Length: 241
Image 1 (cartoon, rainbow, N blue to C red):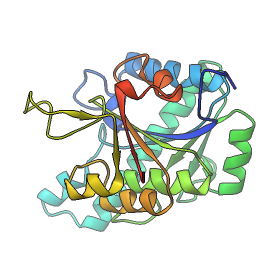
Image 2: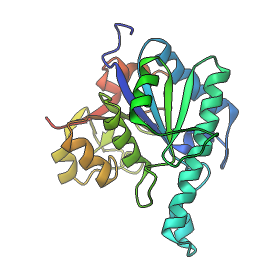
Image 3: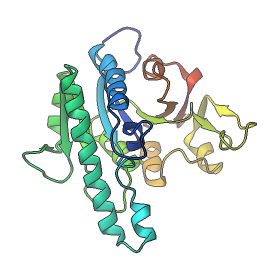
Image 4: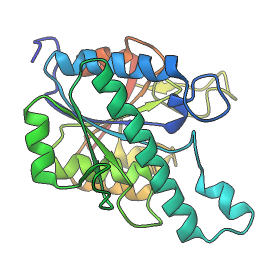
């Protein structure tokens, strides 16, 4: 691993919207290529990277509920959306000469491997990017929870949450220009301030298991490498102390 990085193994959580670029939905080839290039560059430097991607470019369960769709069915549709996004990323990585594996919580042979934490760790140790899709396999859980769960199951050192802003703020920075960014914040303070870092289940899992969450702006092409190098000037680290 490159000496400039402080992490050996991380889980990166990205949104499905990142795949659609400037499109209203679906996939933008330029956006997908940019994502795989950034992640692949870090992986080639020796960082072991697990990846969870949302499905917002394809489907949002909240939209289905708004017109009466059963929550369970809506959530399963979202899980299937993450599998499609996982397939897209796996093939994009392979096209770029980067070895990647897709594992799903719901068995989908021959589309992908079934999730198994032991085989996932072996893949990571061999330098492969491991993409976890299908959520947790159960409804009522978000991809935030999936990210936290898979990070713990594969002994990752941190959850990197890629967003549109460079960290956690006192208020919505898009609405309040006076909002201040935290460089570091404890789980307890984030909870007391009701800051929306992740959903409550994911947040509790990370806090209970002392797994830091690093929130950063993924639209900056250099941000991932900076975060992996320990630069908190462009991110917020949420931890126990």
